[in-house]
Structure formats: structure tokens, C-alpha cells
Length: 309
Ligand code: DON
Image (cartoon, rainbow, N blue to C red; front, side):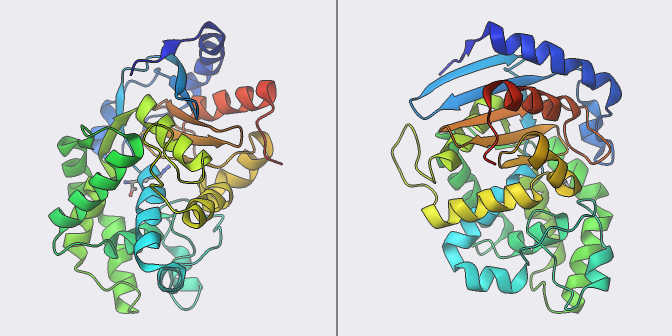
């Protein structure tokens, strides 16, 4: 499927794009530093299987933290709320996504929510499969069904780059292992987590996944209930309270929709009017969210009255 370029949306992209000057691409994962700072694209996918796009929408990008909400959905469907929330909490932190501090200051040393790195690492450690490879195939199968795209895979270059450089994430795994919150083998989970974060797609795939959430887990094209209704509701709630990290409060006021960002510059948005939004703009603000992507969502929310509040 190819989306129609939309002139009205293109004008909004051009407006928001000015913000890229003030942002910076992520470089703590070396491969992400190669991204094109000034690019910005958006796709909107509606439940009636129509879509609109603007900007450089043929670009692909890695999901990074957007994958956290997808791994959470799968693990919640497999094990249920009680088990999953015995490993990870349900509260926002007010700290950066890779902060380690609350693991020590909050007892027991359980990560506060599944959207921060510590929480996502625990969720990934619970993924079904006898090996990291089996778990990755299982997760990829789920994501391919969400996007209705069998071609989706992960970017080896980005995965290896993060695997080599991700020492704080390793430290958090070991810290949690000390307190029996984390049961898996740290290197195996890091292998799976870095590949999960490196799953690659374009803004159309991402918008389609957003649309699945907008439809309470039902796929607009295949009609399959890919995510159970209750799990889709839980994921959307986490996206409102923690999806944009320690900017989630301001984002809720300015935009007011469930959304999840990644340090690659991807943002997935979910509208109550039955559509999903996929954005890619690699220049980030100081909290690690796409600076022009957030601006674009602010403009769109104001013009089209998207806020759920
Ligand atoms: O673990 C990390 O640091 C990255 N793979 C993902 C972090 C991320 O995307 C935070 N998002 N804004």
C-alpha cells in the first residue's frame, strides 16, 4: 500500500520541521548518530484503511523504546496482569528513561513502569522462547501481524551498535538480578532487547500499529484481534502516563493522546477518532523525544482537536 501525499499535512510538516535545528540526534548508541537530523515524516492510518502522509515517508527507522509497548502487550497477553505487575510497577517516574536511581531509592527494587529501560528489560526477560533467537522470532511474528507486513525485521547494524555500548542497561539488569526481580541471563536478555529495539519499519507500518491500538486491538485490514481489548487499554494508559518519559505530563496537556517515543526519533500516536499516527524525526529534545515530531503532534492536536481530555 502506498499512502497519498497530502498537501495540508505537508504544510504542517514544513512548519514543525523548523524545530529540528534545535534538536540533536541520539549518539549514545553510535549507529543512531548516522541519522539525517533534518528529516521529518508522518503517516496517518485510518480504520477505514485509508492513509495520508507527508515528508520523507519512505525512510525506515528502528523502533527503540516504541518496542517497549509492543513487548509489554505480548507478555501481558501471555502471562496476565498479576504476574507481569509482580515484576514491574505501574507508576510514572519523573526521571529520564535510562535512570537507575529509583532502583535503589524505591523498595523493593522493582522498576516503576514498563516504559523506562529498567522496566522494559524485565518485560523482555519474560518473553516466551527457549533462546534469544526463539523469543525474537516470536516477537517479530507478533509485530508483523500488527503491521500486517511479513517483511519487518531488525537492523543488525543498530542492534550490534547498542549491544556493544549498552553498559547502563547491563548495570540495571545486574542490579535487579541481585534483588531477584530479574531472573534471566543478562547477556541473553541484552541480545534480545537490543534486537527488539532495532526492529525496523517505516511511518506507514507504525501508523498502522497505532491504528490497531485505536481499534482496541483489532486489525483494520485483517480483522484479527491481535491484542486483547483489555491489554490494548492497559498499553494506551501507560502511553498516556509514561509514554513520553518525564515529558509525559506536558505532552498530555499540549497534545493529549496516548503516544510512545523512541530515541531513533520515532513516535507512535493513537487517536480516539480511529486512526494511528506514525512519525519519524530523528532530532531529539533534551528528554529524548523527537523535537519536531512532538511539535507536529502539538500543531495537529490543536487544529484537529485530538486531545482525549
Ligand atoms: O535502551 C535504550 O537506551 C534504547 N534502546 C531505547 C531508549 C529509547 O528509545 C528512549 N526513548 N526515547
